[in-house]
Length: 395
Image 1: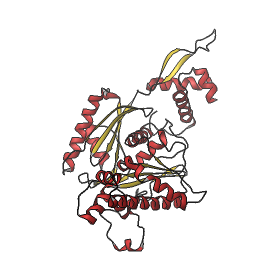
Image 2: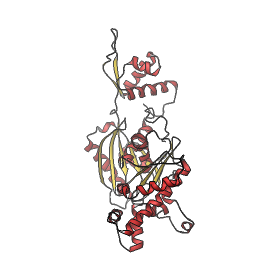
Image 3: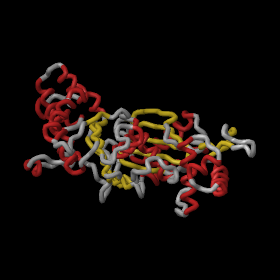
Image 4: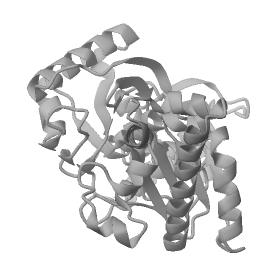
């Protein structure tokens, strides 16, 4: 449907008809009228408009058609328009081609471009978008939008990265949507990567049907996204969920956590490495530390137990504020969750009450969560008449 059309009764009826066709599959005009409660004449007028837009098409005959005029079946065409989803990470970029049903049709991953020049990075990103479209085999004329999930504090309404990842060049005060639109000619929708991943979890992951949930991403860094009472929480300046900066005791007030938050220092891949370096002067990756712990290295085991306890405290604080139904973990560190998750859950069970108890779950979407989420956010922007989660406010 055309964006920004006034929400008149006609438009409301058109929205209802479109979503009935999309959700129920091939239907005749008479069936659509019965399901919607809209007169056959009005349904026919709406169908004609939608056919002109080519978002639906006619095919076949309804098996329920009588001896009179045959009931031509009306179908939704999810591939009438397509979009590109991008998950920008500090070490890799994930790409997807999606349709109007938010189905991912094609994927690709590549290493993040190694440059310190922001403009060079954006030029290479635009070139890669063109290459991805070509490699996907998609009809370029069908591409209607680019959705970008990126680390940092994002002004989604103006398409600006306010504060971004230190792993991406000059990633602050960046009008990313404008820059990419200028290079590609396509509208661009931005969102924080963890928040996009939460939308993905709500669409087809562990947070389906939840009204209050938290997704915590534990990888090189630490972040979260919050759903409260059916609304994605962004905060006054789009910084809700920046849990990496949580403090836990009085002494933490007198330390400088600006480069890496306190919680992130104790509960992230980079934090584990830095803790090991501070204690032993040995450079070890988080993966190596988990391997050492599996081999009963006492210091590695102690650091992971410490991480688990800080993670528990952080979750308890979130539960106390939001009374969450769901807590889901994602990110690279969760590949080793069997090492620390039982301790986290045991701590939670001991501390939480009956009405606040939660079971921490692992994302099954993992890296694809952000791709699904940014697809939904982009589609909601471009085609607000298509309803994905009618009881959830994601923008």
